[in-house]
Amino acid sequence: MSDEFRKRRLILASLILMVLAIVVVINTPKLETNQITNKNTNYFVAKRSQTLDNLNKLAIKGRAPKTGYSRAQFGDGWIKKNGCDTREIILNRDLTDVSVDSSCNVVKGVLNDPYSGKIINFVRGASTSGEVQIDHVVALSDAWQKGAQLMSLSDRIKFANDPLELLAVGQAANGQKSDGDAATWLPPNKSFRCEYVSRQVAIKVKYSLWVTQAEHDAIKSILNKCPI
Image (cartoon, rainbow, N blue to C red; front, side, top):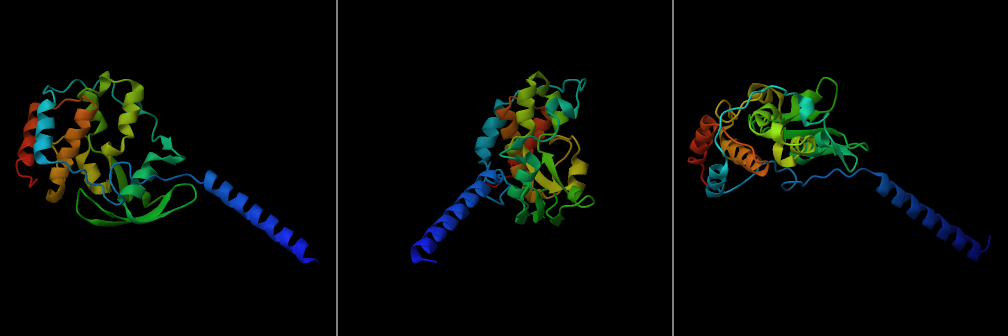
């Protein structure tokens, strides 16, 4: 075999490997991690004065009837972006030491639960995945009773999948919260309450939702104790 022939074979093999690498990259789903904050930072930080100003922009009204509410009013589950569904995107954003498979599924990671302050070792599986849940910071039924029922379905789907509105949290605390607002439930982890209510205010301003008087007063009470 001549040197020239060997050289041609080597060049051809290199070109084939380059093409295969490009195909793999193009067809591998992208799991985005920085849709609100840097990787592994799920806290929404706003200055107290800014949040108080935003709180004052929110209308204060009573709850509208819950009539007509269902989860389907906010879409049929999670949407997909770049081949990855919203749950996996948020898990990858909020957990540390994350492992992700080729289908965009987070298979394991560690959650510092912002609601409870506890460390949860997440492992994907039929009996274990539920230990970490994706919470809607402003509960969907609460949003429905405070303006979301006036939104279009497409806007409600956007709301339900907005990274600002979502947090990876522990199952127990999420179950305790249910559909409560700041007047009826706050995270047991007191160090997270400033971030929690600031985030709720930001969400309600963004989507033109309102607050009840009790909710307004509860949020203001928390903010008045915040250090920033």
